Length: 164
Length: 200
Ligand SMILES: [Cu+2]
Image (cartoon, each protein chain N blue to C red):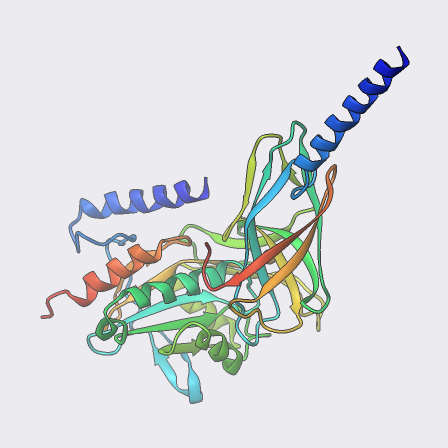
């Protein structure tokens, strides 16, 4: 009787270990692929990084923060490039060309269960503010992503001139 | 989503144009009647007044943006740079890329030139601090821009702007326009088609 219960406990424990191992590289079923940052012109103060975030788990999650080593940039923010609303007072020029694009900061980027969210040029991106030095082709940038449920996940973005 | 919206925009313009003739094989948007920008000019390197016309037999790509723009502007510049590498070197040599800053407060001409130099050897930085002059030029192209309100001295503001690239010929006619996200393959195809046009 006692032995069975012990064995059962062992069985439960081993299932837990397997589950944890499966979550290894990603955290909580989240996986980040194709992470890259664009090379930056010598004088540029800001840079941008892109990636695909896949939520392979059964529960929704959200990207709520990002940080970067101060040796790379002063700070990192989640941004989205959107079409801007023209304002009669403040907007210059005339619109014949499909409107203006602008960026806005995003507090929370939903990563629904079973879906992949793309951070790509002209859409969501990780903006790197006050670069310590230019982003050079062939180097890498480490970003720490903070998810609401899964916690922190460190990703390595490859610096390249154009996307993968 | 974004891609399909861009594709739709190109398709609608292309259909509008197909009905009116013009260079049939261009992949970008062609306006009818075409925009004429050859009478416009802005200050360029060495205090030189630069007219919005390509050199004889060449093409001038005109983009309105700013160097503190980390997503949209470098994406377009990198796509154009990629397109130029896909062209025959003799053709690529006939293409100059001009960038007009919509952020003259932060962008000096030198800064703008350094920025363009990251992507292109044949480049033309254009800048004026006179907002009326800049507005006259952007209005003629159909470009809009708006500088985010900021305290004096605050260097971390954003500038909203139209992100199209205009391909201008040596008579000052805008031959084709490329929306943001237009592929480098299609850019290269349009440039080659225009450069191979029989000349009068
Ligand atoms: Cu941004």
